[in-house]
Image (cartoon, rainbow, N blue to C red; front, side):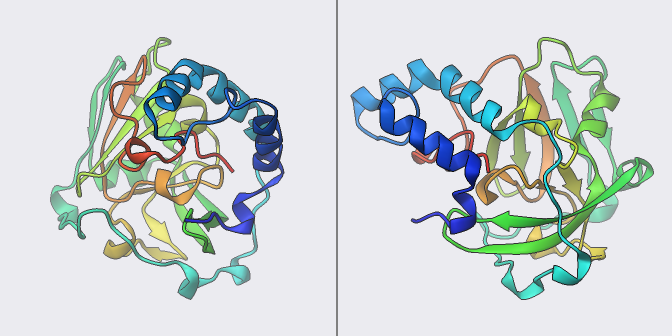
Length: 236
């Protein structure tokens, strides 16, 4: 599947330029046994390079009147799960001092942030969306993350699984969105809670999020699509 033109940003283009100089540098999508071994051996280098290209600054946002409601397509990994808002809990555990189980009221009590950003899908489409909710960084701060934490595992009610580097999770524009385009988040788009960020491709932005686990290292699973050969970092 071809990535959209938006996905080939300056950062990604520079990454591809670096890749052309060495197949060992950014060749993370090959599927044969040798390439998989090389990818595992060079993954920390890949991550450092992409994180450097991504940077830590704020990405430009759009105006509210630029939102494209019809352009955001709905897809799901294993159907749309049924989550009752009254019983919903977001579990935060792993390498934290204070494991949490947060209801929607607790999430709403945190400072709320709106980001009008472009959602870019690896399938080749994009949409400008206004997401709002607490920053993921603020939720993790409540749990008191250990200095040893470096990665975040995200589990969803539809069995979708993702992992992020902690720096991307703590980016100030990475949200646990509970609202979309000024209204409560629709169930089809991930209600009651989903990830939203302008710094990652769409498949990294899990819907129906129910658990966040802070980890010291990546395990055997990288993500639902990453385990099938998709790029892990998937930065924009």
